[in-house]
Image (tube, rainbow over all chains, first blue to last red):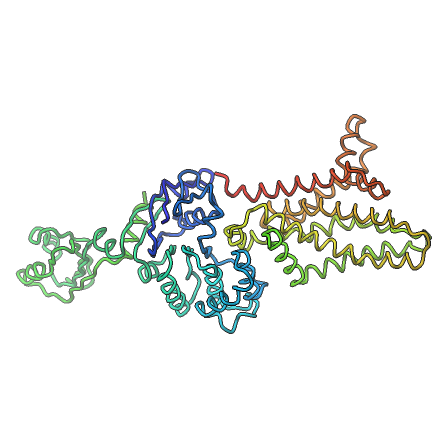
Length: 313
Length: 237
C-alpha cells in the first residue's frame, strides 16, 4: 500500500535519510523506531508531503508523491511531532476547520464530530479553548484531527511524548483501537510503546534502516543472547578459566565485590541453555554459589546495540 | 467553499477572537481620526484629502502589524505542518491569508466612513467621485503592503523580525517619492514609476488610469508569488 523507494533527504550537507526502502501493507501497524535525530520525523514528513525527498520516490497505492501529492494527502491522517494546535481556537472550531479542509460537508459534520468525540474521549471539552486543555486532552484533539476524515492511513509522530504514564496508557489504548481499522505508522524513540502496539518494527539510525521485522523476530534473530550473572566465592584466576571447560560461552566481566566474592557476567547464545554446565563446573571446583540470575536480552538492548554501536563509529 | 476562502475565514476569525484586531483597529482609527479632525475647520473644505494623506503613513505601521504573524506564527508553533499536509496548496494558503488581511484593512477603512458622514453633513459640494477614487487607491495600496507583509512573514518564524523587515520594505516604497530630487536624472523616471506615492496621487486626483491599477495589482501579485515560493522552498531538494 505504501512503498518507499531509495528515499534520501539531505539538509544541506547533512544526510538525514539515507536510501530507505520499505513497504507497508494494508492494515499493518508499523512502529518506526530510532533515537532522536535518526531521521524518523523527516521520513514521515516526506510521506505526508510536508517535505520533498532529495532522491527516491514514495508511492501510495498507484499514486506518487511528486505528481499526486494532494490525492495522497487526502488518504492520510497525520499527527505531527509535538502536536501543533491552534490553541486560541475552541476544540469545536478547530475540528470544524479541519473537517472543512477535509471536504466534509456541514450536514455530515455533526455525525462525524459525534463519532470522533466519542472515539477520542473529548466529551465535555468540545466548547473549551484548546489552550485551557491538559496535555493529554490536547493529544486527543490532535488525534481527533487526524482521524476526522476516516483516512485509510494514519501517521502518528511520537504520539505519547510528554504525557504522564496514565495518559500514555490511555492514548496507547486509543491507538490500538484505531489500528484495528487502519494502516498505521507510529514513530517513537520509546521501545515499550512500539512493542505494545505494533506488529512490525523498523529501527532506523543515522538515516539508515538497521533492523526490520516483527517484534518477536527482532528479539530472537538479531540478538538471541542470554546474560547470566553469578555471585560466587572462588579464586579469580580459575574463575576466568571457566571458558575452557564450558564451551561457547564468554566471560563478559569479573568484578571483586567482597572477600573472594566475584560478580561474574557470562554471555551465551540463547539456543542452548548453559546453566547446568556452569553450575556443574562450579560444584566441581567446590566454590560457593551465592546467586545465579538469568536475563534475556530485551528489545531494549537490541535497540541500544543497534543504535549506539553504529553511533560510535 | 474554496480552500482560499476557508483559510481567509479562519484568519478573520482568529483576528477577531484575539485582541489583535481590536487593538490595531482602535489605534488606526484614533490616529486617522485625530489627523483628520484637528485641521478640519482650518482647511475649511469638504473633502477627505487630509485623511487620504495620513492613512498611507499609518499603513506603514498598521499593515506590517496585522500581517506579521500570518505565517511566522504558524511556523513558530508548528501548525504550518498541519496546514500544509492538508490537501491545500501553498498558494491557496497565501491567498487566503492575503484576503483575511484585506478584510481587516477594509474594515478599518469602512469605519473611517464616519468622517465622510461628517463632511457631507457640514460641507457643501462634496466630490464623491474623488472620495471613491481615494478609497480605491487606499485599498490598492493596502493590497501591496499586505502582500509585502505576508512575504516577510513567510521568511521567518519570528513575528518581530517579520514586522521590521516589512516595515523597511514598505517604507522604501513610500519614501522613494521624496528622494526623486536628489536622484540622478536618468534614474528619476524609473524610481518615480516604482514609487507607490506617484501612483496613489494619480488615483487620488480622481483619474483612474489602468497603468496605475496595473502597477498596484502586479506589485501585489509579485509579492504574493514570492511568498508562495518561500513557502514551497521547504520542498526544495
